[in-house]
Image (cartoon, rainbow, N blue to C red; front, top):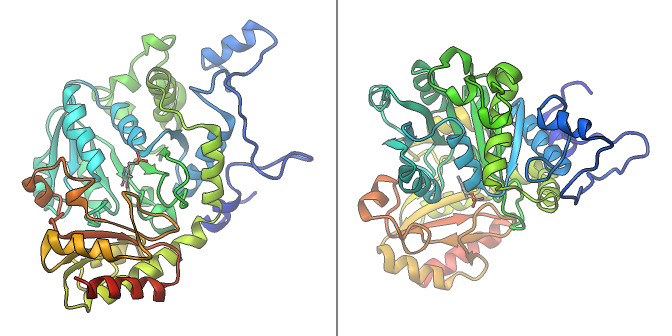
Amino acid sequence: MSETNINTKCVQAGYTPKNGEPRQMPIIQSTTFKYDTSEDMGKLFDLEASGYFYSRLQNPTCDMVAAKIAALEGGTAGMLTGSGQAANFYAMFNICECGGHIVSSSSIYGGTFNLIAVTMAKMGIEVTFVAPDCTEEELNAAFKENTKLVFGETIANPALTVLDIEKFAKAAHAHGVPLIVDNTFPTPVNCRPIEWGADIVTHSTTKYMDGHGACVGGVIVDSGKFDWMAHADKFPGLTTPDDSYHGITYAEKFGKEGAFITKATSQLMRDLGSVQSPQSAFILNLGLESLHVRMPRHVENGQAVAEFLEAHPKVVKVNYSGLKSDKFYDLAQKYLPNGGCGVVSFELAGGRAAAEKFMKNLKLAAIETHVADARTCCLNPATSTHRQMTDEQLAAAGIPAGLVRMSCGLEDKKDLIADLSQALDAV
Ligand SMILES: *Cc1c(COP(=O)(O)O)cnc(C)c1O
């Protein structure tokens, strides 16, 4: 099939049945795979032939869904993981080990902040956080001799800042390291970071890709563009023989297109094992089949809700990059011309107490830690997901105590606004 539009890829990429095969992607619910000779299987272990032997490393259903997402992002290879957390950890740890250093936007998901600042620190990995809207000078000053990667989120959860992907990619490449972008909120329907210079893209597929609050999952997509061999001294894991895997040098054997994901599969999945189940991958694929239809409605509802809130006297601030008043409006026009996502955040006059009262009075929008679901939900991060962060850290991440994050679902926008209106009246 010739190169198709992203809408068609959402529906059909990743699996093309042959004559008489199932129309729907099959769930290969099998831990293991049978071979006629040990020699046949040995070739797989030596990475001499491609095929399956154990579903902790690879499973056909998961691979088909990963291939679809790689096609959506414009990458060369993809790998599903058991969660978004696993995707971000594997993407970073694949090239940054003990003694390494990460430059990361400070405006990122709380779980990823903890992962980098606390858990990876225990592994001997350092981090320098930079504001997403820092100057090029500030960004360049964050790099060290041992920097291995740059990390950021296209639209940050929950601060909703927009990453200047080109600026971050330029700085990363000037220092000989890749840019990893978590593209969970816009999805490839609204932004494809690889087209702007990102080298590796990650997702929590738990969010819009699944879209129905059904399965936790993640994915890593490699652009196949970063030249590991050109920076061989920085990335020995990819450019020198892997003694734990038959002495293979990934960047030599699999080239720019395949080295990163092959190493992540044959080392990290093998040893750490955060796999996505074939059942979950199947459900994720159902979500992907309508992603291009759902995203515009999430954006339409998000925009309508943001405009309503901006005009409301009990709201002091609305963060939504589709609003002209938003600090990130210009960047959103550039990177997200069709809109970003359905997540809006706003600060109530009256801070934490007002937020709690407001939340209690919502009828249609449910209180959940979730976002990016077909059903609208709300959260006050300071008292829930981000409670482990100090006030200084909250401020640095742009999350005041009275902030409410609202994920606009696929309901009618008139009903969402009516619910907000009555809950605000009660405050
Ligand atoms: C939710 C989320 C994650 C973590 O994903 P899980 O699937 O919950 O593990 C990572 N990054 C972003 C931007 C998220 O929204």
